Length: 86
Image (cartoon, rainbow, N blue to C red; front, side, top):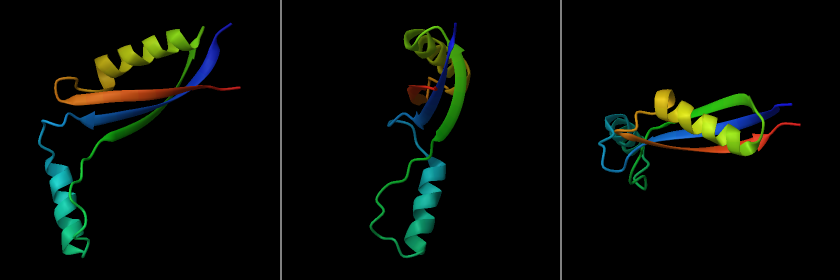
């Protein structure tokens, strides 16, 4: 019987990719009086629940989902955490 898994997925730009949104936020923070902010990078956070026979299968499914849809692997990295729901 499949187990339900809850996952937290983080998608971020690769370090070599410019982040204009992050640069704009940093500029705004500097204007607001936060000179200690050195860098801002903007990414995506996604929560997803899925059913799988075991954690290994859930991880394989999540890897495919991220690679095929949630992340543009040319310019983005992704990582995820999986927790079995009780």
